Image 1 (cartoon, helix red, strand yellow):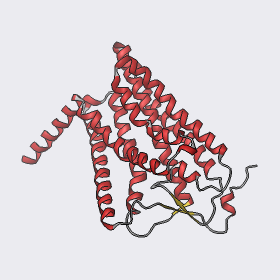
Image 2 (cartoon, rainbow, N blue to C red; image 1 turned 60 degrees about the horizontal axis):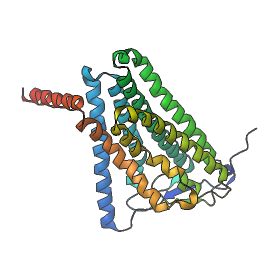
Image 3 (cartoon, helix red, strand yellow; image 1 turned 135 degrees about the vertical axis):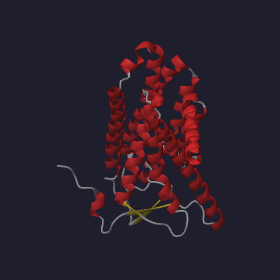
Image 4 (cartoon, rainbow, N blue to C red; image 1 turned 45 degrees about the vertical axis):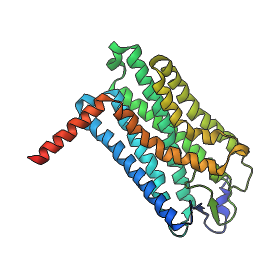
Length: 299
């Protein structure tokens, strides 16, 4: 029979608050506007990719199917983090409940891990396209593509659920705990535990290694076959797991926040740029869509 969570034995509900970026009103306004603009650009850019892939039959191929799913993941990934972060820039610190923190951690880990696995799937897709061009459409069927995306989501959800559940069985000292971060990420939450966390750190390292190593190996194999572009994509998305893989003694809390800002804003922002500005098919479809829209407006 499973032991009850130590958190449930506390006299009051456990809540968390996030560390503020700054207390200077002018800087608060600047950060709010900056993060909001970046968030809106991420939403619009990735939504444009999904829209153009769904509405243009010429893009109904496995590669663009995976690309539209990647864009959807980027939208969800940033939405899990940014709105709550924006709401905490101004005014008094707003507490988040234990359940709310756990939910954010689960979805954050699930979407980030799915992102990594999907990049590996996309690398395999390019491998098949180059090694078996004549049989590509016979191998990469619609059913197989859906199954591969489903497996990526399923594996990421399973790993994230186990890790999140393991962390939130820990006791957290006090009623209101301050997270030295802007989201409920694993390392800063673990620092608040009033118990031995060596087992939890070992599990975190194992999960992080799996999420990072497997996609990296597949992408590296594809790199040997199709060039350096795929490896650069893999490097950009690896930083999220690297935060979790670093030993606790070498981890700077400020460094964690800085790296988190990169994979919260920069990486989702680069996705539409990498896959559209350097892709003539997507650029052509977008151009056709805008010309058609302009023509219809003038009628």
